[in-house]
Image (cartoon, rainbow, N blue to C red; front, top):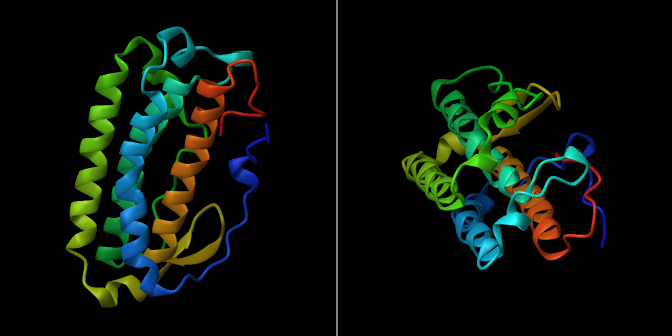
Length: 179
């Protein structure tokens, strides 16, 4: 299996064409279904397995739910004309403290689908000119437009989906890290 690159070492090429906005919304809309598909028929012992005390597949899904408020806050940043995007908690404290493995997977997935739906409903209300303004990303120290931020969020989804896939379909493999 190929190792998933470390999230915090990823590089991103911005700016993206603003015309990618609808494509990125479609990609973000598809994440809940893709996660549900990966988990379909998976035994609980595989879902909650924590190789080397890294996140389990279910915790990766919980993390995607936990990060939705950040994506929503950043959309607000664009709408309100902030100068910098809301910073993420780089320690992922919320996910570490959430005890996602003790929750029913169906509950996590349903909450994620609902939260992602709210984000996409909000994105559908945004005027095209707003998609062109840029804000500084606090960790990357690079300007991002809304379309760039949506690409960043979609890449974050795919990053965790790759980990989930590896944990579910290659339970003997060991991911290189949890983010």
